[in-house]
Length: 386
Image 1 (cartoon, one colour):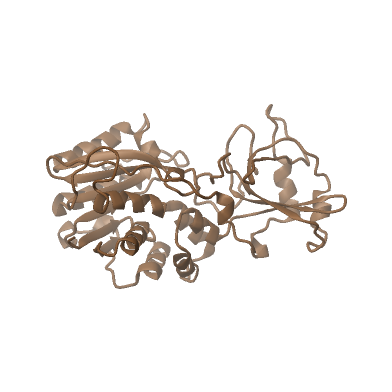
Image 2: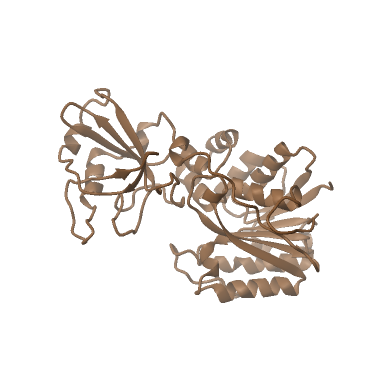
């Protein structure tokens, strides 16, 4: 197989590069080289270099890139910002010339016009194919078609690719030339749940104060919207994931939290705001409890860990944030790479943000495997892409 030359636009910490490394590990005959990446965020650049070295040229600000100066390559990835598409943002859109962050996709298009790599891989939020933005997405596809690309897109959920996170993202493979065909990978069995990704021993700084826990509890509302004070309830499935809430009296919460934590007759640990199958909710860039622990009718649901320690007459109810290591585990980053990220010098809050903005590695791994390795072992028929 010829060596595949790769450029990562909007690279983040290089999740595509991590997936290609994993592919090389599993298939030693697979050859690739990342010849450049494009990233402007200082923390992302620092994380990228911690993972992949500082020898790969950074093209920098994509709005200032001269396409003729970009190295030749076979694959470009372009996970452009979802800021103006996501339901969590202002939804200003991605129209060409709108100067939104999401409209940076058109700067990538200008590079494609000049370089014409054989294939492209795009990732973004599933809202890109919603009624509000489908015309913009169609315009992107039409422009790529005019450049000679055939486009194949699909919404893929990470939990269907063997990673316990309920994260739906839109992927589009674009192949240059007539008669191109591509099929996305078949689902991968889920063999673990999110509780298996939690750390056993966590620094105290991740825990909310007793007063903060009770403040969050007091904001839980019942199904009629009435505020309930000093109540916390949970319904947990056999995998230990908190999936729903009901009213339970925990009036002694503050008192219990002030007791010696070593005075413990057993501890239950549960993941906050997963689903009934043991998957985490979609990981976001938020690293703190900005609102309620949960609301019965939906709304903000911050992930974390709830611990219940048994005493003679009370329960010690503690809540903590996820650690940075847990964030990266939920994004399917390998442990040695997590070690590199945690020692990269990037602030912890920024590490969590980088994780929430990234792409689940195993999803990319299987997409790349169907592109380069298993071209005859997938749903439908597919011609070799390389």
